[in-house]
Image (cartoon, rainbow, N blue to C red; front, top):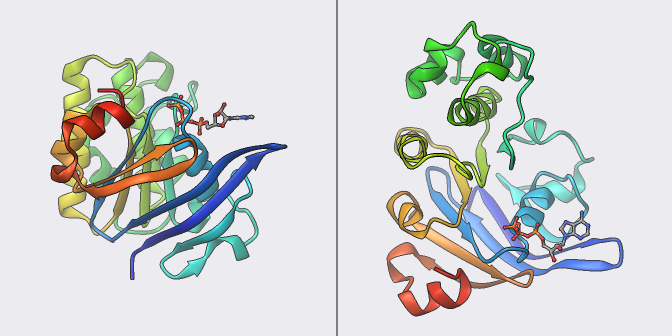
Length: 228
Ligand code: ATP
């Protein structure tokens, strides 16, 4: 059984249906890339998983039907979300930001700083003074501090310099290898996804229209469905 199990998921914004049937599963210790052009439903899928918006269909985490639980903050469901546009408390220090989301488990501040050394170096600085890349690392650190079973990164490297992007992807790949966490990454960078993810699911107009091993994704399909 997969840690995250999604079948025939649908969701709407008012009268506008945004998801028409998404199938997606992730095993513990696996990295899966969710891809597709702009507006195809990637972020909506994430919102449905985190129960930020209502959805219908099968949505299970570790065998538990998330639809049957009252909509909680994602962390309580065991989901660590790194949302689009990195959200941290700007006036708090890096340390304070990390401690603020901490829940008991193996991910402590020390372990987060081991994975993302820059956060250790900047421990006492205000989040507002960090570079874009460092703020993104802090957002990842904050998600890890919740000790999630599922980590979701929504456009985690958008707008960052190539070197910083590399650093972040490297850390995510390490995470995938060293922890039993299931990781869902949303990004348009196909080459980087191919390096870190084992499988991809591609959405088109709110439906999962392709899924398979990353190395089975041919150029023609990628061009047509992702636009690269
Ligand atoms: P992007 O890469 O641009 O973030 P996406 O694949 O994440 O795209 P979504 O943001 O999930 O796409 O959007 C899916 C569809 O739902 C789009 O047609 C979008 O216009 C619509 N949509 C998204 N958010 C809302 C909202 N708050 N209210 C109404 N419609 C929305």
